[in-house]
Image 1 (cartoon, rainbow, N blue to C red):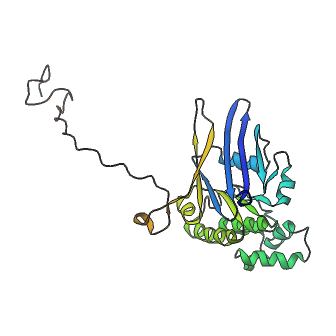
Image 2: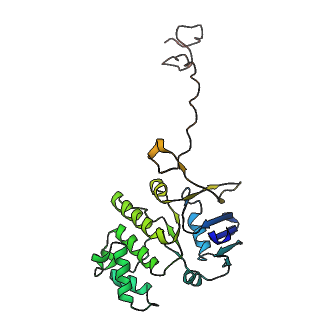
Image 3: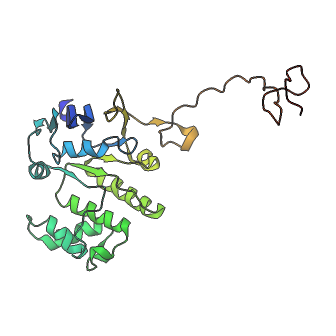
Length: 273
């Protein structure tokens, strides 16, 4: 059981001068699966990512990767260990070519050009290798960012809203790409598009506010429910509908002029309608 857990957080908390952004998050990510964190904007999902990768230092709590406590490790060391993330805003070098972007991520390796071209081919960017990154459509830039993330050979990829702001065609392309790369590694993602979550994810963690004062986030993880009545056999993220309420007697119509008395009854005071 312990070997199945690749990433674990215990009591993860982040406070900003009294404002609690993330409160007591406990999570376990199983090896070889795709997990999603969902929740409203501003709930702290990206803050949670920043804590797991030590772009922010936790106020309290512990983080374990492959059973090793990495709570105090710097971000660069965590990335070299195999825990690599992407960002909400596309983080590529705009005035370098597509190939040069991936070569930079591979600079510690041998035979860089061959590996860079193999990664570009894997994410569908082989024909764009000589083009500057700034010239790519937004969806292709996100694919390039995934390629540079894969260049670090991660065991666990953290993807922060990988399909945000995309056209439907780009969403479908990136969804297929994530599904492809997830076949050989673990993925934890923040995503607002529930169709993407339903297509890709084995487990979903829903974040919500709690406690007075707001700004406090916790996650409850569950497997998506399979519901063939909704969309074939894909996971259903919708809540079961409540049974219809009992019909009630419609109220008597009110006077069009005063909206108080009931025409045709004794309930007429000063209205002359």
